[in-house]
Image (cartoon, rainbow, N blue to C red; front, side, top):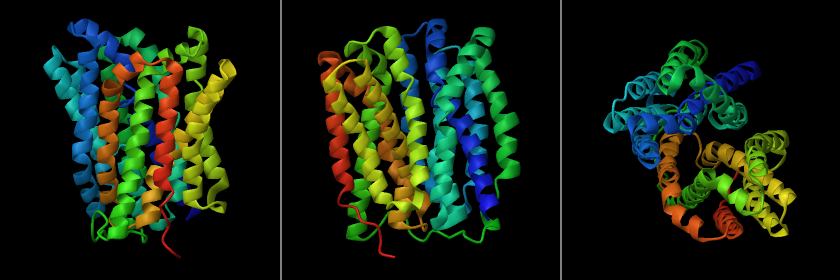
Length: 386
């Protein structure tokens, strides 16, 4: 059993690394060259990615219901094919309309195959024992940005942005697809499979917990998405040079991995909600360090902020499972994904005027204050007895 869980975590971790790397981290590589060739502004080209996130959010509840009934293997396989098709459409884009069509297709693929679908797959296969496997998946997939920003930057210089997209379509179909097809077991092969009976929580206490949890994730991802777009300018605004800002920003990714390792290491010895609250606290603590000024304070902020985000990603899969159980888990994740994806899609645009108007330190402190408010939303939550 332990070996099968390890294999499940390894397969889905590799799957998520590939799927995240070739969707969520794709715009940073191709948006600039695509905008130049299509004769469009960067804002319009990047707007297609925000649109894809909205499409993913709109599809997420239906995907969750489907996974509850049929297991997640089919959704993950479909996502790989759909994302590859989106890559091909993007690669052939003659204008902005086709570019948006390609990202619409990728948005559907993202709803079928990113973390929520992977977590739901594990929940369906392992039931209440899915937590450690979810942690393992996020630990491996934490390297997606580092791997694919480096790979994409290398390949685009050789293949161009259209060739890069075709290469990514090939990687999805030749590596990701057969790996999931051959190594991921179908739901029916697992005795732990539970058939979902309901959907979103129905009792007043469950609806309250759902609201608190959904608001926590939406607020945190709204803040993190805003920081992600402006991180280099914000770090330079706290009196770092451009090379220092790049070096400090590069620590956020390793910080995420460090947070996931920490969460995995302390494992069952600490209550799940306590771990989640500690993880949520790291962000405002990191923001408070900025009051000290200097490169070391900024470094501490980047590491603690990254650790907090890394733990929060695990919580997105483990907290709903612990609070509401395995029945209807995929459907619940689908509903929780809607506000998160909406926050991710709108945060960069909505926060840009505020970040431009405020000093960088004030902007980051305001983000830390928002993270502290999010932490308060976790305090009333209680795990079911037994």
